[in-house]
Image (cartoon, rainbow, N blue to C red):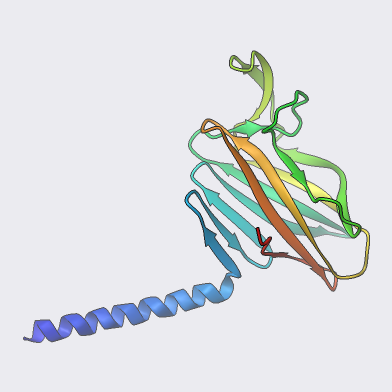
Length: 186
């Protein structure tokens, strides 16, 4: 009889303890969205997209008088994509844009670290600059206004070997001189 009473009380205690942990987690996270293949977590200063083939993380870094959009890509299980520095035309090479905004634009060329190296690709019948290791992209931002604003952008690439076109939206809010990530609503 005591076992029958102890078991429900124990289950109730465990469920209450689990609820407390979840509420703490949700107060720190602005949004978590899960689809069949990806989980997107948006914090105030970082957006993380977790996929079976990669983990992509957006951050804003401020140096002296410059803001940089930093994108870290950690490749999983032999995944790869074509570098934005590949000169040949490929519909799925890494690409990033902000659309057409008057308050913010990209400044200078994107930086890729480590710089991917061209290698012979039998399928493409020539050399191709493949990104096959964890890579960081840094894009300087040119702020053209002191006013508060929001901008929406995207990163796209084809992840190999599964050959899927990845299009990842992101959104930035600029308020009182500070950038934060917001839900891109798409």
